[in-house]
Length: 337
Image (cartoon, rainbow, N blue to C red; front, top):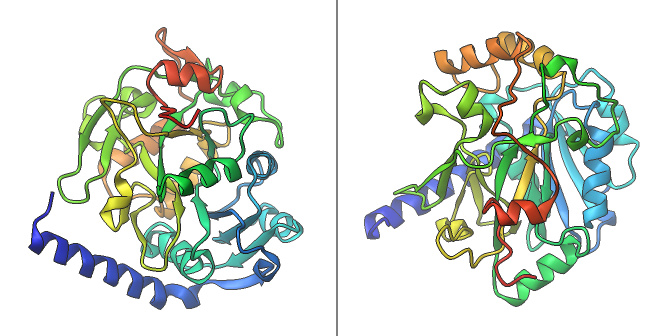
């Protein structure tokens, strides 16, 4: 827990992020802005994406079913029909940019401006195109019910574990049709190889593990991706994400997990990264280098993904819904249901 000096530094860090967001705002240009039609109590989704037509139909359908009212999406140079498809959706507003994703803090500067401009006092869900949020009883109670309950409890944010799904057998052998539910093709996950610790400065719970650490970072587990996120927030213009949705300021918004008592409601972001298109995307990323810093570990990781790996393991668990994840301790219902 930072002392007075640490708290002062965090305030200035947050202000620098907000200034950076303001400076980057001109990098994104509106293509179709329908946000004026959105109600005061609308639930909003924010995302940056590139070439996601393979996922978009189900992504939008999933979040519409959860009760999302409007999507604010930054497209970063798609050439697969993503832009035209999004612009044709009546509940989507689209901005475009050709600028560097990496130099925009992996898109968070662009999304941050949209959150500052349009998200204030809305419940805002910030996700990637390959992330599908679920939470306890999500099939029966939508996000409007959940956020009303959070409001009633005086809670401003909800955490989620990114649960990485994968197929049985080589990735590129998977049969998947755009528009289908990707969890039917990617129906396996690791249930018990997770570690967690609190970040001493930001205060967020730092969870690592899952299939990427098991397969790609087994020799350097400390470099494995962080899986804990704070994607759902009652937004305020004073807020700013630090690193994707893994870290956010002010730091009290990280008070979303209770590893010991499981007293807080948490969700899971079903991560559908390992569809067959991953090989093509990884090959492109090795050229563009927009999703990671120039680290040997991540270059090797993307190279391995181009080689059609089999991620399945005999301890893999089949995805069967929220109740199983709650029983396994990967999601918590607290006193929500």
